[in-house]
Amino acid sequence: MCALWIPYVTPAPGSPVNDGYGPQPFFIAEPYTKRQGSHVSREETVRVCAGILAGEYDDVPEQAFYFKGGLDEILASARS
Image 1 (cartoon, helix red, strand yellow):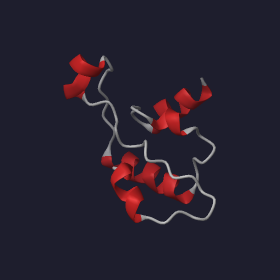
Image 2: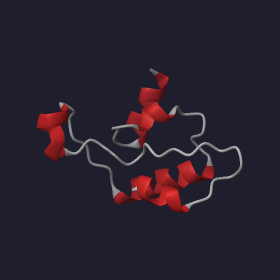
Image 3: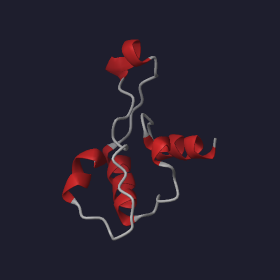
Image 4: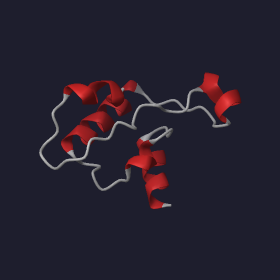
């Protein structure tokens, strides 16, 4: 999960650090959060984390990452 990696990475000067990616909605928490759980593959998680660290998603508001599943859901949240 990207949230675990970010404290150990020094961002480029002026780059925001997104620590909101990673707390995806878990199936076990559905009764408590009232959010449907989602599954994100390890490959997608690593790809998106690498993109975050490379600055590919600097234009996406940090709040769009919070409690979202895959990248499609994140980007849809950012557009709304």
